[in-house]
Image 1 (cartoon, rainbow, N blue to C red):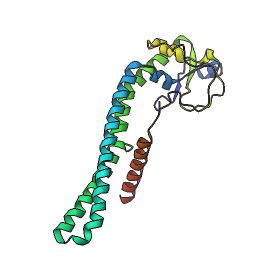
Image 2: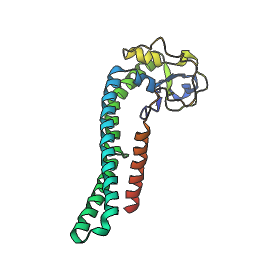
Image 3: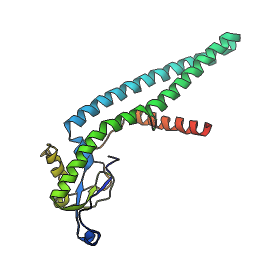
Image 4: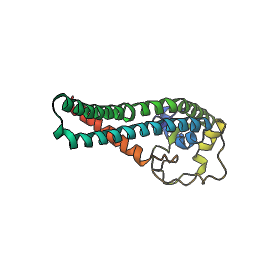
Length: 213
């Protein structure tokens, strides 16, 4: 979770800083175990898949009309030529606007995902504060934010405590949480190749627009 990157709770004075207890929480793991979040995320992913399909249809239509125009333009004259050319350029502009508006940095997908995550982030943040106070923790690190933790004694991992406070216990089948692979996102978000390609194209569209401005 981007917004819960590093949580620092100051419980003592500056002179006591070196004596503070440190805890670690995997916020991505906590988030992925909240049933309400998983349901909301599934609905969002369904909407994103629909938008990707819509975009694919637009691109297919554009390629078909562009190819037909290139093959037939030598036979077109006057207003007919202009009309066919405008059809192609309008479709191209529509695709660019769709990519930027839905899949760009400030597009609908990112906004919806942010709106989806925010309430759950707040719940996790409040649970972490409660656990920190109860266990006299001065610093709490979020290991899901690519913090390179080579080894973590399970006594300092408060992920289960946060989950319990949120009413969700860890499944018994989960891997032990005392050994940590550095730089691994425990939620393991899987983006489809098509989604990644669309995001790259969205960044390219935004860069082109910035250069034009």
